[in-house]
Image 1 (cartoon, rainbow, N blue to C red):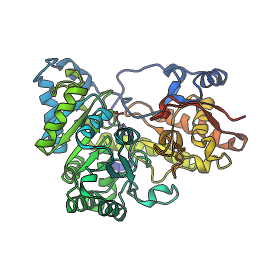
Image 2: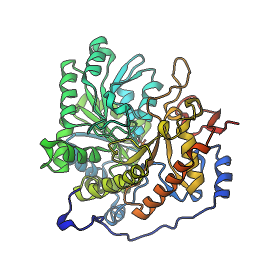
Image 3: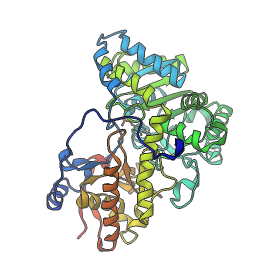
Image 4: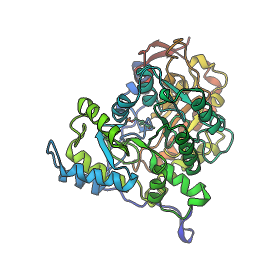
Length: 463
Ligand SMILES: *Cc1c(COP(=O)(O)O)cnc(C)c1O
């Protein structure tokens, strides 16, 4: 990426507060992972040295965000912190109507309560797990219309989050209008590897949707990272600012949900943005029932202050450049050692292709989860399986769904780790890779919840 006068790249911030990390021994980790039933969500944070489980809510707030907390107006109704956040949302996304929620899935719960009924079909690009959960919980169906290139980790495509317009057109054509309450576009597409959607594709989706009079909703957790990729990969937008690109993205949507724990760099928060007053009013009732009064929606005044500030910081070019640079630094280190990774590298994480890493472990023994636990045992690095465990069983047949991609995600928290930490992660994963042929067996399920099982699942090694 570009830098002036050929000096090496450096972060546009410095560190003011530090938090100690605890190292552990391999024997300790072997005991801990067994006690955690081979589910990395069950580990205590002090049992983890470098935590790449998620980039959600794990970012480091800035001095401005911390000081904004002191300005929190905790009035039940009409707080000034609400106004500040409403203005930030309007300025960045363009949406007139706004409802705060405590996090992204809460925004989904509220909006989907107003929009989805049993038997509905919601097409989109690989729906995120909570999104799909909220669709299937309402006995509706999520249909994946992502382009085929997304499912081959070896081919290059600059926008692997794109929706295949033929696939989408077919779903729209074959179903009655009333059956499709909206199309959902995930920016960036988390489950397909943090892959972006092009502005051209967003425009085409909207055009097609308007033809069938179906609204378009963006699942916008990583709207800024998506805009960064548009700026760097879509010729037409290379001179536009990140904020201009974001505004143009949202011109092609009727509404949005956002998990602010990602690109708004806060530890908790979410919101819904809408253009239509009627829909806003309908959603308002559910927001009051599930989240809180409309001017706080599950957030304290101070949360809304930090969030408003975070929306601005998260959409600055210099910050985004350092963010994406660090993620790609890890990707390159892994690739240089021959480790199979999803390419091009995503925005918030590097995805290791477990199918190619552990080809001798059958999919019924969950190679991605096996790899994730081995990486933890080797170096105390925590990451997450993005594969069969996450995908849940088919709601009708109750059979395991084996996604085309069998991935392990190394998600990088924002502004948290240095590149020395990244070097450590790459070195540990390289050791696991060298030993890959010695891992002969995978894992089997001992207990699981009926929906969203991967958070609480219990496993044990296959004997
Ligand atoms: C994180 C995320 C969500 C859910 O948000 P939470 O804040 O975790 O509830 C929804 N969609 C996408 C794409 C996400 O990344």
